[in-house]
Image (cartoon, rainbow, N blue to C red; front, side):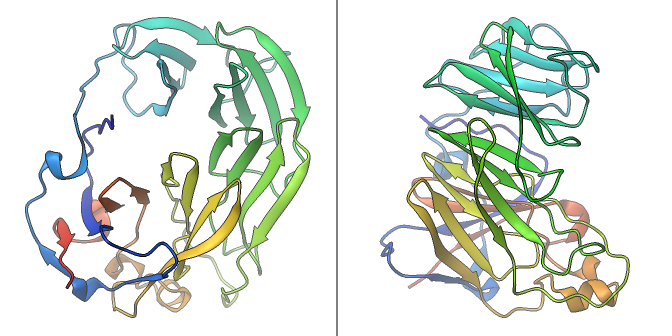
Length: 289
């Protein structure tokens, strides 16, 4: 059963019914028409959870089948599915088994392990479900500060923002084993920026659906599907004037672009979300022949 939490961002829905999985989709803005969005269109049920221990407004949330983690400035907190506090995972600090405020979380349900990725030092900490420190590993990542971090079976996936100020060929993602050995990394060879200072546009979510992820960066025309089987080109953006491009950023025209912060997959739709500060567009649903 899918649970959808209320969000304060705009979204549009792209129908994925009756589409061949072997065909690369082309997503054109002109294919979308304005339509009211119903929760029943995108979720079987909606659950509103009010945690009973602290105000965790703005916390990062990671779900397991029987609990969820809330990453807060006080550290990582574990709650059951009804929002009842269970325990804390490690602690914020500089001591053994502690982590700074620059961290991401992932859950290995097969091994009953919670991973904490220390973004600033490329270190992986392992904890039990009860919050006890288990191990520490150095990560062989191509660069620090991956923006998102996931665990699928016996592999860890790290996703990067585009840092146009410092990179001629930016990394999109890297894959390691569960003790930090690098297995694969991907560069985006399609981007070319003139020298200068550019803003960074984070991707808030990588689109985890079952055991696959939809992966993109804010400048790339291609959306990839990544799983343990590998990577495949899944969709491409068509040509339309709201796309973010290096040329628009260089000309300081990025506020006129639709900067997609989230793409995630459901049974019937692909949902794309963008912050309201970047555009005045309304919610849309695709209607295709």
